Length: 111
Image (cartoon, rainbow, N blue to C red; front, side):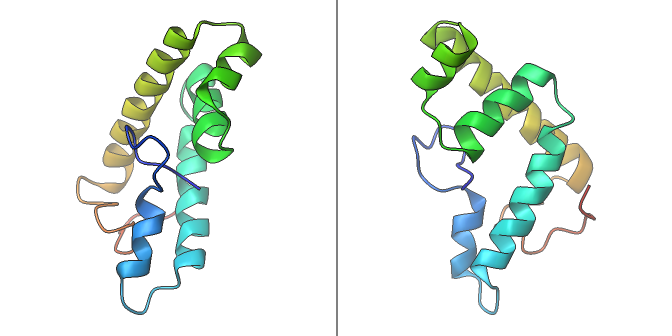
């Protein structure tokens, strides 16, 4: 499940979808995750990797750092930068208002 940047493990926009009337939360999460995963794959390889491992596969930051041979601090900085780059890309691709309500009203087509 995706997490919002800085949330320390809290579910991301997809989890908020259960608050939207008439929206199937599981289907919305699958489509949001697919869209975000596709966009993340267009980032620098190291950014895509950290997002996939930590945010999508729920690996710990310490485990990611060990896997890649970098310090925990470096992994934390990389994750922060990757999340910012992804947020910028989502805004450029889908518009500034996309994802504010769990992407239920996103006007863009999946990548």
